[in-house]
Image (cartoon, rainbow, N blue to C red):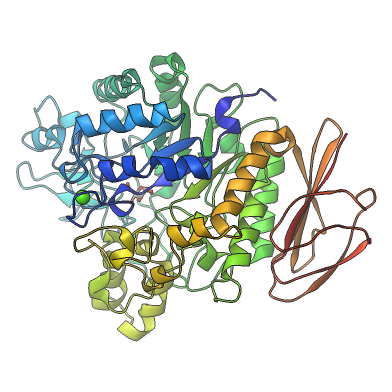
Amino acid sequence: MNRAWWKEAVVYQIYPRSFMDSNGDGIGDLNGIISKLDYLKLLGVDVIWLSPVYQSPNADNGYDISDYQAIMAEFGTMEDFDRLLSQAHGKGLKIVMDLVVNHSSDEHKWFVESRKSVNSPYRNYYIWRDGKNGGPPNNWGSWFGGSTWTRDGATGMYYLHLFSPKQPDLNWSSPALRDEIYRMMTWWCDKGIDGFRMDVISMISKPDILPDGPAENGAQYGDFTPYCIHGPHVHEYLREMNSRVLSHYDIMTVGETSGVTVEQARLYAGEDTHELNMVFQFEHVDVPGKYAGWRTNKISMPFLRAVFSKWQTGLNGKAWNSLFLGNHDQPRSVSQFGDDRPAFRVVSAKLLATWLHMMQGTPYIYQGEELGMTNCPFESVSEFRDIDSLNGYRTWVENGPLTHEQFWPFLLFKSRDNARTPMQWSACPNAGFTSGTPWIRVNPNYTEINAEAALADPDSIFYYYQKLIRLRKTYPVIVYGAYTLLEKNDPNLCVYFRELAGEKLLVICNFSDKKQAYTLPEGFLGTQILITNLNRRAVDEPSLTLQPYEAVVLRRPA
Ligand code: GLC
Ligand code: CA
């Protein structure tokens, strides 16, 4: 396997709106991020991925961009951005930008022009169709609720939006549009940024003919994904993007590829396919819920283990994995995969971190994950800000079959706003995030769970992540070693080997809240404990009693 800096890096995701507010308007901003660079340096990460900071009317918090070469006024100015970049670089931190080019904002000048007339030079930058039988061109339902089509008054035609009507899909089959995108990307690369995280990049290619999608019995809308995910030209476009832009810079690229299979990922992120460096796969979180994606159940370890094991072995030597449990679209990882009850929060957060960071791939830490931040006990619908949560409520309660009481637990568990409550810096008012009124409520557990407390406690989750990152930089087996799953059917234990040139790691994780017995495999008695989330000192007996949520990593040198 070829070595690369981005394979050896650990990435930290910042959701700027919720990270740190520097001027008291209640909204996180670029100067706030600058003020926390030393904190990230102390943690030991190499790369910061910034969720979008571009100019945007904020229908979807920046995932609806109205100018790709301007900074959102609420976040600061281009001068602030340049200062962030140079200060980060001065500290040895890289900056990866979110790139949202499946769609733009409807307030982008391209769309403003496009909608004016069928003869606009920008008409073809978007996907326009005539209606059918007095309705939209087909039955597709948007991921944010409603039809994927909105009729536009000026010409009477419909435009496609796989997300909200404020997010019209760009038409990648237009060479002029692709030129514009590559020019814009080149501009950012020339500025010195270190890479792109590409939003829903697996959806940029749509077929010319857009047939009705399969609809579940009685469902109002059909599914667009068979036509729009991994559409006909997606790999061609990415190879073109690679040859025109990416290959000219030493940057890292990660594609958000909902619905991706191992086989597809080998194309998107193959060692020699000249597309992207790695992709995010979503099999461990895109689990159908009771009401579309809405669910209240945590993800079980056996399921998690099966998904990750398939990806670990499926990509080994062929393509590169990205490793994540949390991001700005997911419940907090300790609430979704661990155990956020007070007695188990810290130990299970460390268990999850061990389990994830000991695998092959590039790990991603979502802001606050290093503190063990949890889902938020929201108390009313008016506290939610997320377009997807509010649309979900409209679809299922206001216009749908459920009562408020029936849907509430689903909203509470799964809302993207769980991940978007302000970063908890200290026990000061508003968690030290802002001196003003925060744009979204602060999780009340900030008085206990916060960065200041974590930095003062040598046993904190923060320092545990710091150690995991340091180990990754010390032992190449953690980055590059091959993965083998043991105890395939154990209901509580997830155990695996990593192996590189005769050096071997044994990773043992007890995912249950009960003690579990485990017998060491041959050759690990008395070996070095690389890291442990409890105080295990030695493994001098073959049979171990693992404590609830205990994780331990053993190392046998070559
Ligand atoms: C991606 C983003 C999500 C956004 C959507 C539309 O899934 O991660 O936050 O809402 O794309 O841009
Ligand atoms: Ca601010």
